[in-house]
Image (cartoon, rainbow, N blue to C red; front, side, top):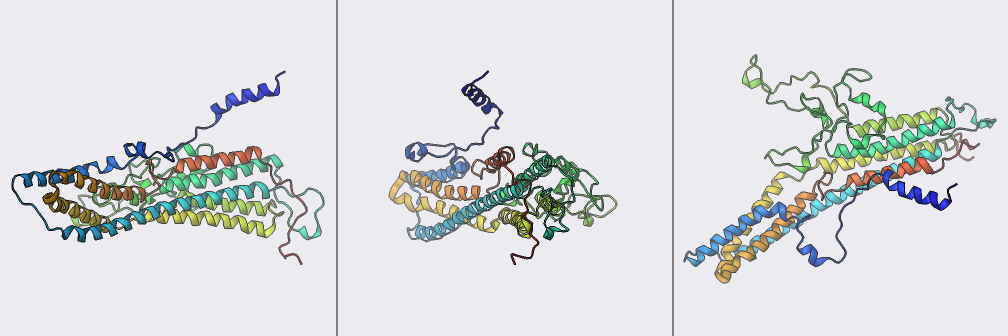
Length: 437
């Protein structure tokens, strides 16, 4: 017979192998000034290296021309004027981007808090009513379901996993990832939800695949794989625009490249897709709808009588809070910083950096080159950081670690299901909805 210590040691040796790997992010040490000064990985240096070298090369040309007798000199009063404008624009740009980053973090934290509360309340408050004689005021509220305690517990566990699926679906929706073929959905999203991904499924009419796509009808365009990420969309200038990963989810794509010999060239914008008029809805909203239906079923079958109408209202309010936080996250993802603002900022910084060597070369000579390089690195680095954090829901290292947040929440929900007690089989605590009078 094995002793308690032997069993404990054996369990401890097996536990690391059965736990899912934790998602970790590298953090800076508290007092690591000098190592971080020479650190390249994780810095903005790689992103701005090209523009900085361009400004440095121009400074070299100006310094070399000055040594050959060419007077490429500007008066000192020009640079201070540009410095004030550039400084104000950079400060506003950086604060706006970080505000978007922080707003995304707060909204996602609120989403997790609502999920925790909803999971706890469902696990504790939903229970079988008493099987003995019921009080007189409970007349008409007898349960209409013959579920056993084991069956109800399994149903509640599936409901808790559906709550968790809302957070996972919100993460994929913010990243513009359509479909349900993602590893984090396995064992969490109920298998019955696969029916929404089938062509022709709807309660009233046939609808295309991707009815809960994150990006409207993109999932039904021929040749599009609904299970792949669409987060790499490009802006009109051809550059990947992180703030435009999610388009308006109910807008129909403009198929401007489609033509036919039966029509003239002026009719190239006609939509030929048979499902062009079909609507779409994000997967998180379908999950919220299902959660409301489940809560309604619990109330109808008598599993929420111990908490009364107040408990029912509390559950529905939490579900409404989930949708509210999803909308707040959607606002951050769907509200890009105006492109004209970013263009004007880059133009002002470029004018300043190209005017700076001609102002300093008379007094500094060849020393102008390192000074201009340092200034360019500072200004362009601020712009590069702001550009990276303005859309915090991607997969980059500097984006919010949404995968880690979701993994931590999954471990919490699994712990509730496996170890925490339920609220019991029910007590004579029926509430007739008329108060305490």
